[in-house]
Every structure is written in structure tokens, then in C-alpha cells.
Amino acid sequence: MFTKAMMQNFRCFKEVDVPLKPLTVLIGKNDTGKSAFIDALMILSRKIDFSLDQDIYMYHKSLELNMFIQEGKHIASRISYEPLGGQRAENNDAALLKTSKFNLPSDGPSMKSPGVSDTQGPPELLEQGNNVPALLDFFLRRDRKRFFNYVDESVRHIPGLKDIHIATPNPGSRRVDLATDKDFIIPADKSSVGVRLMLFFLALAYHPEPPELILIEEPEKGVHPKRLSDIITLLRGLTTGEHSPIASQVIMTTHSPYLLDLINLETDGVLIFQRNEDGGRGVHPADEEKLRIFLDEFHLGEVWYNEGEEGMVRRA
Amino acid sequence: MLSIYILGDGPLDNAMLPPIIKRILDHEINPEFKAWKDIRLHGKGGYAARLKYAIRRVKAIGSLQAVVAVVDQDKDNKGTRIVKLREARDADRHHNIPTSVGRAIPHGEAWLIDDHEAVKEGLGLPADAKIPSVAKIGNPKGALNEIQRRQKGDLQSRKDAYACIAMNVQLARCRFPGKTGFKEFVEDLETEFADLVNRG
View 1 (tube, rainbow over the protein chains, first blue to last red):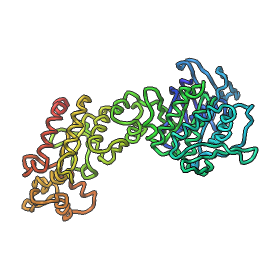
View 2: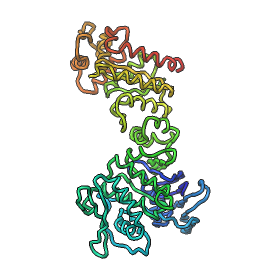
View 3: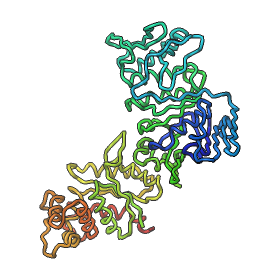
View 4: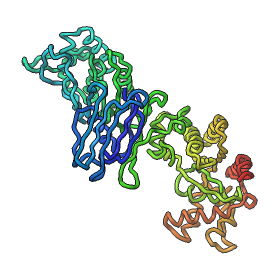
């Protein structure tokens, strides 16, 4: 697990040095650098490359990105760039980290996908939530118990759902169909955004080889506030390796106070993103000592809504 | 200078409560006003929950020292709002935040119009101007606004008018302070803030 992220001169950040927890939530107003922070983690995981003309905070500054493991002492992944001479250096002591970023579309993930050969192992879920049918098809053929556990949990979470079928409209594609308690069978693509999002998060939670680092942009999009707790429970299960041998680290952005209500400051991390007076952006961990004063009676999201980001951090 | 977090109903309470508190305590204050409706809570509403939130906020941010919370009676004829506020305050004594609660009957304007001299001084009315008795009018807000409307009209001037009257209100000149809840509020404020005023 990554325990710390440090950045110098990356995009809107002059300097960042923040702790990371198994489940970390990034909050802040629009355009305060949350997505840039996610991209930095993608760069450190070698999922995307950095761009000299777009990713450096100020022209001709040196760039440095570091991710730490082991109580923040050991640099697991590092990328630096020194403009004088154009020198770029990097190391990656840890094995290349399996990282996935999810930015689910507001109209929900598709429940149709190409079929995938069993020999390639369980299919990865893609950034927009695609590949759920291929993954469920893999379960059905290679890990039937996992498939039935997935169906059972889906039935518990989705009112009116009785069963899930994997249809093969043609040899090269798979489709999720839902059997309802009124004995209708409907293609899952005709179900609500909320149902498809739940099917996606369940698929992620039941993935036998989930990403070690899961980055999610606003998982609350399209989800009823009362169903958010189901999604956070699934994500928390990923951080403890509930359905796989791998305990993932989950880092997500949110604009939802209801999602923040579900965060436990004892175990989870909250990072606050703000604009600095110099035009750059700052990131600070939530001031746990201050926030705990509220938490005997109130939820964290309530404090965020009422106090704003500035009320969540230690005063300078 | 006492830094006080004041909870009330809206802009007119924001105009009148700080000068009233300053006059009662005979102490300079640095007020931060918050309308009840602007404290938004998910799980529970009500005045008591909002007061508890305010007490924690004062403790958490450190730059404020105390809370004053005033509710209007409005349709709360049984007086449950003030009872619940007192219960909430008692439950949160361990936070050591001086907290005064008050109930304006039927609303804050009753505290102003009950001191006829303050109304005349605040609005610049002649000494022989007739001010209706708060005991005889059902709607002090309407009566005060009517008096004030004869002077000037828009909301800004209403706020100014309220502030000017409020800074002159004296308990000793009020005719029915027991009926308007003002006497009870003054006593509560003086008791709750005694240590803070002596220290500061």
C-alpha cells in the first residue's frame, strides 16, 4: 500500500506531501486539482506518461513525483525531470503496480461487451466501467461459485432482481440480462443508471484479481444517496481483500457530503484540495483533531457542507 | 472583545441581536451571525441539533468564545423549542462553551417595540410619538414595520432601523419583558456569560 505521495511542480501543484490510507477520499471545489492528483498517481503507476509542456507547474522548473510505501520511508515509485539538459530519471522499486482508474459515464456503464478468451485470465474492467459482461461470463465458465455469489449479492442490493443471465447475442459479444421478480427478462442496458452502477461496483468487488490501486472519479454519480453506503461497503471490502487475495488501495474524488458521511477518520483518509493565493493548488489532510469535536453527534459530510474546505483543515 | 457566534432567524435578527447582546453585557463584542436555516444537517433537523452543531463549531475553530441562540416563538405555543435548546445546552456542558438561549415571544420585534424610548431614540421620533403596547398588539413585527415605514422603506433601512433601536433597548424601560421573553433572555445571558465577561 502506498502510504505517502509527494509531488513538486506537477501541473497546478508546487508542492504536495500527503499521507495515503487504504481508502482515501479527495474533496474540494471544482478545479482545485483532484483529477490532477489522480493523474499523478496514474503517471507514477506508469499507466500514462507525463508531458513536458503540460504537466510541469511552471516553465523550466524541475518536476518530481514520488510515492512512498512502508511508513513513508521507502520510495516505491519516482519520476523526476530536470530541465537543464532535459534529464529524466525514474525508478520503480516496487513491481509495476496494477492500477485502474474509473470515471464512470453519467448515463451508466454499458452492459454489453466483447467476449474474451478464458485463457487470458479474468478481464479487466475498463475506465468507463465496460467489460462487466465479459467478466461475469468468465466467472460463469471458470469460477461458477463466484458467479453465484455475485448474483446473490446483486439480488440483495437491487430491489426486484431475481437472477442474472449472461446472453450471447452473437459469438463475439456478451450481454447482461436481468430476470425480475415479475418474471420479466430485460437487457441490463435497459435498466436504470443506478442498477448498472451497482452491477459494476459489485463486479469490481468480486474481481478475483482486482487492481492494487483503484482510482475512482466521483463514484456517487447517478447513485441514490441511500445506496452510497452499499458502494462504500463494496469499496471497503476491496481494501481488505474480502473477495480476492489482493487488498486494493482505493483513492476517490467526491462532491457528495453523503459519501463523506460514510468515511471513518479512524481508518480512512480525507485530503482537502484548495486554491492557493498564488494561483496554484494546495492539498492538506483533514484536521482530524478538529473534526472529531463534531463527530460525536454529526457526520463528516455535514461538517464539510457547513464549514467548507477551509473548515476541514488546520488553520495556517 | 468577546467573539460570539449568534444564531437567529435572518438578516433582521442579524441587525438587532448583536447590539442587544452588547448592551446587556456592557462589553464590546465581535459577532458572527448564522441564520438557523443555514446550518444544514442530513440526519436530524431542528433547533436543538443546530445549537449542538454551533457549540462544536465554536470549540473546533478556536477563534470564537461563546454561543447566543435566539428562537422566535411563532407557532410554538407550548414553548418546546426553548425547552429543547436548554436540554441541548445542558447535554453539551462538557464542551465548556458559554451558551445562552432565548425565546422571543412572538418574535424579536417584541423585544424592540416594548421599549418605547428605544424606538423613539432609534428612529428619531418625537418624544410624544405614540408607540403601541406590546401587550395589546398581536403582531409586533407588523406594528414596528408600520412605524418604521413612515420613516423609510427598503430592507436595508429596516435593518438599520432595527440596529438603531436595538442598541438603545434597556430591560428597565421595557413594560412587559416577562411576556416577550426578554427578561428571561437577559437573565440567561448574564448568568451564562458572567465568567467570560469577568475574564475578558
